[in-house]
Image: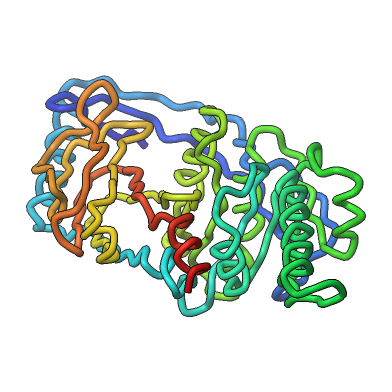
Length: 350
């Protein structure tokens, strides 16, 4: 089967990839984690012979049908898929996503999110996961919180312990022996495939659990000050993990980032962010978006084409509490969150 991809007014014939990846099947019951060795993930099968027809008329017909379908969707003859987002549930007092809770994931980077936010998100999580060397950072966090609690409450006084990890995943080339011993009772899932990042493989491990427990949202403690290739790898995981029942949010010390798929998105922005005119951005990472329209931003787009080397939207801000983004291609949405450090200081004074 041939597909046609539009590039402005031109088009070209493409052949979709074939084959299927290996599926994770490591869990029989909810939270039934254990030591598991997982086979290679996403290894495509050998491509099948394929013949491309080059008859000009056939190509012209395909282009015509594709163009008509594209125009119908953007003219709402075919209604676009609609998405609603409430990031305030993630970055304000609720600190919880979804009716069934969310998943917390700790990557192998320093935890930038302030401790009180981490603890609230961790407490409200339905599943808690550390990815390989992320378990080292989580161990440091747990020990640091215990020491801080002991000092504030006096010697010999124990604070409320953090909820335990449910699972550690990865190829285990970064986790230390001390950390293995510290989390010796925590189930571990070995994912040795080197063709995917530990983060990508962790999402694949978690998705069957999420489906069974009707969990849709994953909150990832993300370091925006890290190496560019690691930041881009994390963005790539957003693309690879996109499903109707899986939303992945990258949370850093002062921002939230997630993927907007083709369709019409309504984002309810916390009023504090509107009044303080915090930044937001739309980025066409990976491929061009040929038709993007927004409302509710200070600088809106109208049927704009977005691509690197052309137009991108950075350092934008809000005109209203509700922002709408309609796009025909994937976009990365990122927004400045509350100034967590200021909130910590304000909380300490009260």
